[in-house]
Image (cartoon, rainbow, N blue to C red; front, side, top):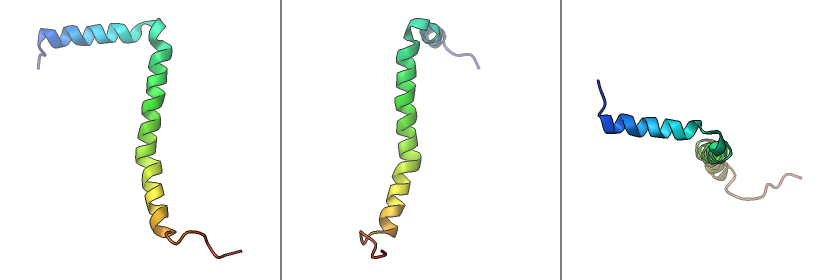
Length: 63
């Protein structure tokens, strides 16, 4: 299925921008923030929720 010419032009412009070496550091920084957010939502938030339900009473009395 062919995409409209405007979409192809936009895609080509974005790909050209992404290949430029001068934006590499900024794009890596954005990718790091995105990966951190995804990790937090997928792993840390559910884990914190489960731990809250398991240990709701607070401190353990084991010493």
